[in-house]
Length: 370
Ligand code: SF4
Ligand code: SF4
Image 1 (cartoon, rainbow, N blue to C red):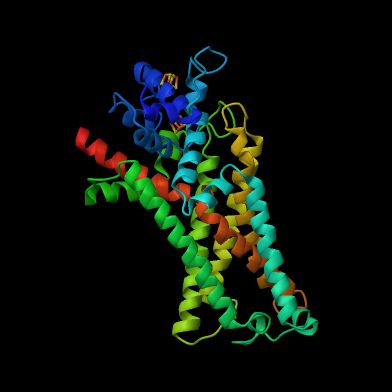
Image 2: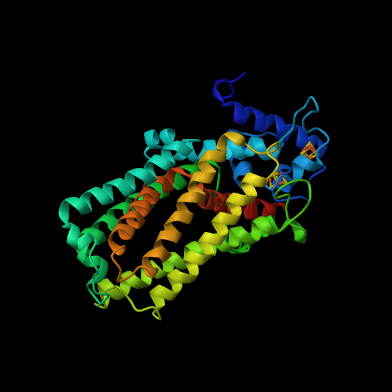
């Protein structure tokens, strides 16, 4: 046994054993991208397994179809093995590494980041502002409103610092994963194919009949909810970008009227996130627990809950404009956003980036295989 094999994790060893059995069996080759990609390999190095794990989207179709699944003595459960390996890849490539280890599989740390963010923003606001300002009814006029509670410079610099940290940490993590998983040698055509597969959530469609979201029956619920959440997030990002551009570049200060582009984009995005996250949480909790990696449930649910709360408090803030509840709602919302920025590079949120790298390698390998 080589030294690499000696130090590999149980999830890595289990995934390798599963792929060796699957490569001999090949019953599931039409289910998703994983099995055709697996068939191009005879041996599975750590980088190959990490790539295959991130190509898997956890539909559980192979579990319900498998004659070697538990209680068979082989105990093949690719969905579970790959879920654990994916989580390991997030922690292994996280930057800085100690933070990655702290967040690994830990829903409690996500909750603490939420609570810590809220507490910090509330505490600083109460230290810097009088109760009359925090609980007062403030004018909803450009340059006033929530800027009277948290000054524009403080809000902008904090958002910039937290955002840059998250982008840097996720960029470092992705670069490390990119190298380790062998994502190289791709062409523009491969990039186009990967973008198309990612934007349409192609494999969550299960060739039209959907996935095994909750049990052995097929459904497209998870795919639709995932679309709602992901496009809702992109709309909120667009709303923030347009708002920042209008405020900082064009000199049109927030808050904006209800019928303005930043507010309408944020409204549509917030509704998408709330329904998408609530639905995904419901599917996750209702689903047959057997094929799932139950030890990851807390961290996954924590991230969905955090996104849902950010969207809900964002919409609440819009509804409570010009009332005495605006100040505290703003602090809670910004605290949650701060907690999200800290959590983002170490949570399942990076799955989108790692999965894109896996789709890109897959597009290249399938093209080369003809
Ligand atoms: S999951 Fe089971 S049925 Fe599917 S290819 Fe692997 S061993 Fe065969
Ligand atoms: S869980 Fe779904 S996506 Fe993952 S390997 Fe099995 S069939 Fe493919």
